[in-house]
Length: 143
Image (cartoon, rainbow, N blue to C red; front, top):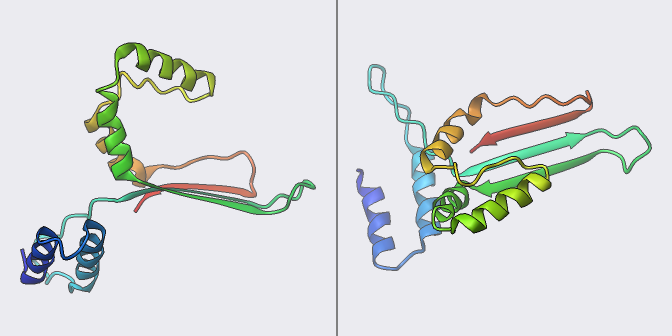
């Protein structure tokens, strides 16, 4: 661990900065670090922090015209939700699953495990979403 990173963590431990500020400072340090010299071990891929879903369309069918939706969900929220699901009583999970199914979201909360979420996050780089409308584009990725 380099000295700058250690100083940031020390300031966080002393309460001089918030966790969000520490995260931003560490991200800035990571961006400033030069590329590894040839032959050095490759740097590990940074852990994604957000799930982003972007949808854009060109509506020529007389609707409201072109539009765009941009949703950014913190992955920490999803990770916490998966852990919280294990604390929910089975009867409540059964009701939640029924409500999700009725809304068209076929997810079984009783079978969702934290390691499955991590595997899903790892594979989102390979995700492709097909849309029947050639003027509509959907992107799902982690950043």
